[in-house]
Image 1: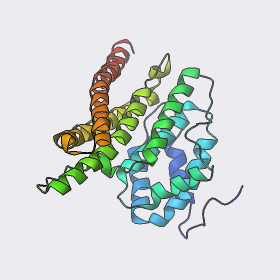
Image 2 (image 1 turned 45 degrees about the horizontal axis):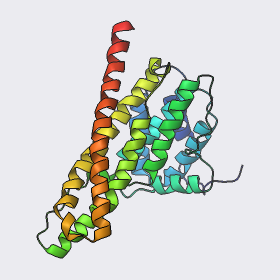
Image 3 (image 1 turned 60 degrees about the horizontal axis):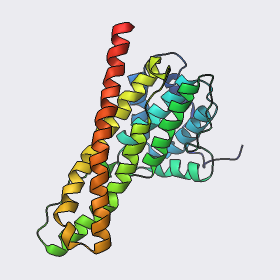
Length: 259
């Protein structure tokens, strides 16, 4: 196998061991102690990112169990949200994806359960898109400006950002476990993370849309038309998100009552 990255001076054994321990095949949650240690190592020593990404691509690429694959994606999801910005983690993953060392979309994972395979594929597509979107854009607060030119620039920036977040929100709502998939405890744990992502996405849309609408009539005609489309899509996504969260709650209540 060709070398994915140059090797750093940090030993890979500990990271590989932590990743393997965190993605065991049992139907339990990821140990928080392992997750905390992985995050701490990557935060304190960014050069170890190369080794971790290499270990992750091997672990996820060779997974034949839906539990292992889902836990790998959960760890990737949490690291994308937890690591500080800027950090080489995202760029190293993008490099691995560009060179076909890792494939999230399309995802090559297969297991005996069709329902679990579909869920893993949907989750992988979500994270593939999340790689291209800086998490800081989901938490940025609108800047209050009074200058007309600056207001238009801020509105144009919102118009550029919101469709990307809306694409991410669409992929979030595609991660709906079907058939027997919700019976897996690991799948339900992943759904918790995905549900939190949906709240972050919709909150970002709710913050950015008013900035765009307040200056809609002052923008260029093409931007004005695009802004109306974004507003209509946001209204539609709000209704769909309500149904998605209702299904998520219903699954938990059903499993709690009948388990």
